[in-house]
Amino acid sequence: MFTPLGMEASCSPATRSASRGAALRISPLWHTLNHHPLILPGIMSFTSRLLSDIPGIRYAFLDVHETAAFPYSEMAPVKLVHGNIVHEYRAPQVERPHADAMFTAVSGQKMGVVTADCLPLLMASRDGRYVCSVHAGWRGAASGIIENSLALFQRYHVDPQDLVVVSGPHIHACCYEVTGDFYPALLAMPAGELAKRHRQQLFLPQQAASVGQQAKASGDDNFWFDLRAFARLLLSGAGVPDENMEWLGSCTYCTPQLLGSFRRRTHFPAPKSFQYSWIMREPDETK
Image (cartoon, rainbow, N blue to C red; front, side, top):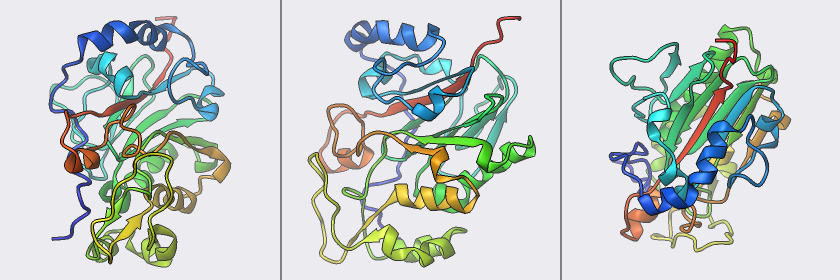
């Protein structure tokens, strides 16, 4: 059994309860996120230039405080399972689909993910007709969740060069320590050949620098995995241009005052915390 040292348990919240004090404090922000036609710079913690330029799109990458004030029920229900299934949302379902990406052309419905170290990717076509939220931990990324999400856009004749892909806060290489048996486990996945070709880029022998309180090394022979670089390679390999990608936020582990980290909780016991990221086509005012 390989050991990613605390990563990849579950990013899905077991409970939906929010801090009422935080809700009262953040409620003006929550109102803005829901009623302003666009997310504007300075209103939320993480603002995307690329997504803000697309007409008819609303989105948010929330920190833990904003997440505590945000109603989870506003996002289309989904059970995240660290897999490679993309659910195409057309209407509410009786049971939550088991998937790690939510794609839609429906207006007025938020597609969202819950993360606490994994990559939250928000995708949109340049014309704003299609959006997708993607939960990409190393397992999902290695098994094809990114490529499968892009494939659904292509089914609707949206090529990768006509897409925008933006990542919110996630764990960085400064804190993603993996043991020696992680690498062969990755090689056994569909993206294993890619990982093999770029091993030196993805697996750092020395811990990367950080501006926060980073994780402490637990073994001399361990490596530091660059999840962002892995996702970038997958996106590039699928045809998404570098200028159509954007990477927001600091390391989830290093930023305890703003961001939840599953791995950090395994090292320093603390209440469960996570963050929401969502994207939505603006409601159709003609209906």
